[in-house]
Length: 68
Length: 336
Image (cartoon, rainbow over all chains, first blue to last red; front, side):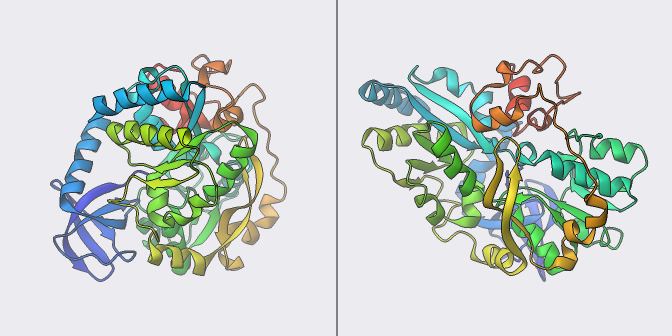
């Protein structure tokens, strides 16, 4: 339940952003962090909880592949 | 990278030359450890045990029963999918839904703000990672039945009851609370991510701390975990929630280990106390979830495991979550 998924901020409207998870795009609340378009974030139950750098985020993608 | 650390682990385990017990606190860590058989590749004197970090598993029977009672009384409720199949004394939330109760399954906390969900009672569960979202809902006037818990108090309790030489600390809980709280436990700890390489490296770093008798905390997930944690999320929790003495499955009541709404009008336990007053809870006596959560026994030690208790027919909470529950994971990877 504490797993978080990395994605890239595509656009921002108020507290919400469209996050691109390797092609799948969904809305998430970004009010807990100061995120900008193009940055990578970790999302947990619909909320971004931290920013991550792009290289690390991509490493985390590999993690998700492994865990499936 | 992994091989390098495995060799180093072997070497340092020889030098320590006595049995060492390491607890991985988070259910997500347990999943990676079981999936890759990490327990089996470690030296014989290094024992990994699972801790109380599966939110579904540690939720008290009473909290399940209370939510089922609310739903059956005609109150519209909502829950994360993880909790739907946890057996209560009189069935699960899924069963209540089957029988006609209005139970919505929520995947993102934001769904609670939709018009059709705003008047539901939200079943808030989880540790510090999931709590800020509930605090956000409270800020927006959603009524919450809170079973939210914080991680450090049970870990403190475990260090006095079970012999644990070191903890692998949960990565995303730390992302919210930061690193400071762990220092207060005064036990060797490594904050870790969720990949197998990270976990093996964490075991090595813990063994070094244990060998050198250093009660330090190493942040080995610093790409995500900052020293202060997420200040905005913490502030939202502080503003909307307060500590209370929460009941944990297996561990009993632990002082100031839970978070509930500050606003009584949004606290379902108070708002619906007339319904909840009469709810009676009984646990299945043969189920050993409580001991499994404390690390005292393994799923295979339970007489129900894999026989009458399976993911399709869970008798206890630890079987329900196949991603975080010790029994669900052990069943999935056929390794009790």
